[in-house]
Image (tube, rainbow, N blue to C red):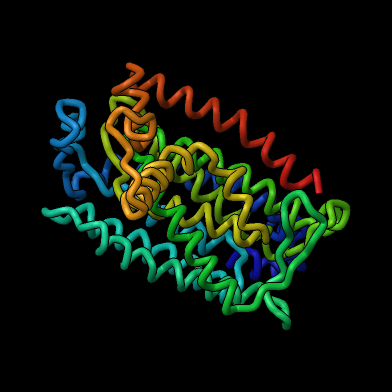
Length: 362
């Protein structure tokens, strides 16, 4: 809103031109979201439902019992007016942001439910915002011939029809949302990893894709509207940084499915806006291995069973627990603090290496 109003204000006072700078809007939005979340969250979390713990995980799984959960609802609602004020988005992008909030609401309804939703019910509800966001992104960013996308490790640029783009994009959104949710099992883990991913995505969206001279130099299809999404992801990252202040171990509050689903689908949305869906591998490598490994293990075991291949209990694939942070805690004896620190360090190590491979070596 402020970005569009600034064109009328510049004539009255020159410094108002700062309001036309995406970098300035990004800085102010991030700072405001962080401070407001830190101030307002403790005043509001008494209204949240309380976590029931996970008895199946034993004593460790019951440590969260009684803590306020579903804080993702409060954090994203605190960020919402800041997004409205500072994020310069068009109609279709604004509708995509609205769909992000629907994903958050579905997660919050699960958080407050006395009986947790089944996997099928969750999966079906997750498909709705995923399909909506994929459709809105296509409507807002596609060229007349289709969605223009660039590939890693190749100079190739492909044009994808809506009949291919929308279902594939929806699948990526659904997958990332769920693997991020699976990674939310250690205080601060999912939040820290996604904040790192969102911060790097802001750089890619603002400098690499959104700034035409750099995009041209890197042989990447430029997208000026990507800079607006950089403001979105950094504002949300700032809001969840304020939440992590209280989620640091021993945590006082949990973001629940409302937060993890919102963060996961936002990361995937930003990747799609960047124009290369494979960037998800560079932005969320640890989250994908940590949360997605369980899905891969389940599929592999079921496939082996259908093919009549027996995988014994002593096989390596059966000995590895998923999410992987559970394996590190139960089998390797890592503490929660060690899991958090080592996973974050691995993310910081892998992300720039993979990003260079995806962007520069083409």
